[in-house]
Image (tube, rainbow, N blue to C red; front, side):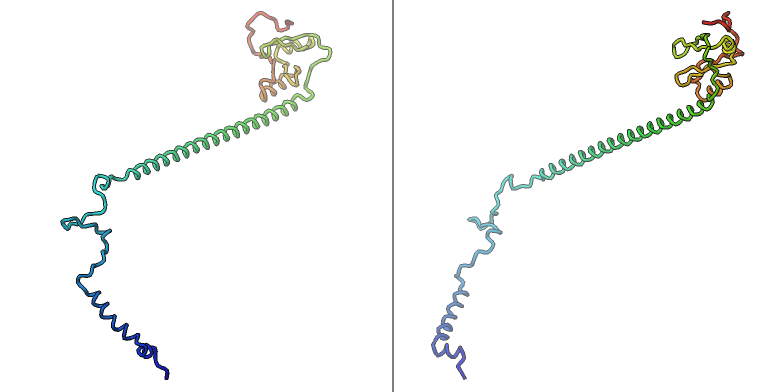
Amino acid sequence: MADSLRDQLLKAGFVRKVEATLPKLERSVRSPGAPKPDRGNSARGKQDSRGNLSSSKPNGPQSQPQGRPDRAVAGAGARDKVKRNQEEIDLAKAYALRNRVEKEDRAREQREAEQRSREKKERKQKIMALLAGQSLNHPEADVARHFPHADKIRRVYVTADQLPQLNAGELGVVLWGGRFLLVKREIAVAVQTIDPAAVVLLCDPDAIPDDDVPDDLVW
C-alpha cells in the first residue's frame, strides 16, 4: 500500500519543520506586549492627553440641529400648488358653467324661434283659408278711402255703394300679400282673432262719433 501524504512528508522532513514553527506562532499571538489593532476609533473618537474621548465631529453652532427650513419651504410650495390647482379647477368649472348656460340659452332661443315660425305659418294658413274667395275689391272702384296705418296714410279704392258700408263697419279692410282686401265684417273679425295686425280698417258700428265728419266723406 502506498504511503500516505503525511508519511511522505515525514520522510522528506517537511512535517517536522511545520510542527516546529507552530509554538512560535502561538506565543506571538498570546504575548501581552503585542499591539492590539485599533478597532472603531473612527466611530468612538480619539483620546486626548487626559484619556478622554473626543468626537471626530466638529463642535459649534453648525453641529446643532437648526430645524427643517427645507421642509417648511417645501410645505409652502405644496400649499401654493394646491391653491393654484384649486383656482384652476374653479375657473374651469366657471367656464364650463358659462358655456353650458350659453348653450342652453341658444337652444332655448332656437326653440322659441322655431315655435314662432310654426305659429306664424299656421296663422298664415288659417287666414288664407278664410280669405279664399271673400275679396270684395271691385276692378272698377274709383273712390279712395284713406285710413292711417303704420304711421302713414293709406288708401283703398271702393265703389260708391261700398263706401258707406265700410264707414258703418259692415265691411273691413285686411292687409294680405301686400294688398288691401275689402271683405265682409264677419270675415274681418275672424281674421282679427287670428292676427289682429292683419286687419287695418274695421269701424265700430256702435261707436259714438266724436266729431261732425260724415261717414260718407271721401278724404
